Length: 326
Image 1 (spheres, rainbow, N blue to C red):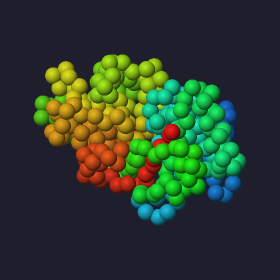
Image 2 (cartoon, helix red, strand yellow; image 1 turned 135 degrees about the vertical axis):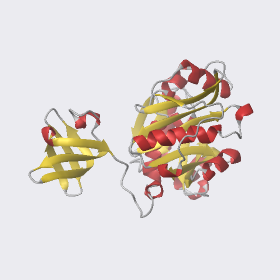
Image 3 (cartoon, rainbow, N blue to C red; image 1 turned 60 degrees about the vertical axis):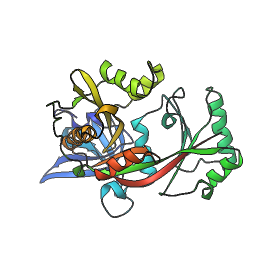
Image 4 (cartoon, rainbow, N blue to C red; image 1 turned 120 degrees about the vertical axis):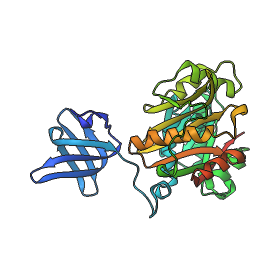
């Protein structure tokens, strides 16, 4: 967003608040951006579409999806809306749509960018939908995978899509939890005992990439991995260096009024020394500076140490998901 043109960062489809001048002061239009042209911005509010003269706009920003229940914003968002937000954390290189289903492909790098995300009605029978998805992945030389989400503790066989997939020989794996927290729960960054502070950069540095590849167990990662990791339009890469060695790293993505934490890693010899907390503090500071109120992350349910760390930082389970493949 710039001082001269606050509308510049908005895009059709965003949920945003647009503040403009009126005769007796200022007023806000809150809703989905319908259209933008050289002279106007149109916002679909609960009262209908408002077409606003861009010359009268004094501020505009993207805001989170509408809450579906009362309570803290990080808990009041629906599972569907939060899942849609997480897509922007590791965006696929190719997207397809089948009604309300999102088909994602990224050269087989990470399940999150290579699976079907059923966010609504596919518009056809479940059987036809699954077969269409299988064909889509076959055409790309990829094994079809589905991401099925539900409340904490949900069972795949209780979901109609889950039952259909199980009957076809698909099996669930990688049960994961989506954790959320209010940004205010994250402490400010405290310097490392060495005096080192977390470095935050908007672009991928060789040092960050090499450290991340090493912790993933690879000397080199495919080009698709780099494309996915750098694919989010608004993100920061965090790294903590001591004596020229990267001892901790993380990545934070900003989308739809939320922050998402990815790739948090601490070198084994530096664990339990406060490095993870320092990284999360730096990410919290960066989020607060942008006016972000809520943060999410995704963690394997089997990763008890990581879940324990996040819970101590104020995170709680919003919902869970399984991948299914055969």
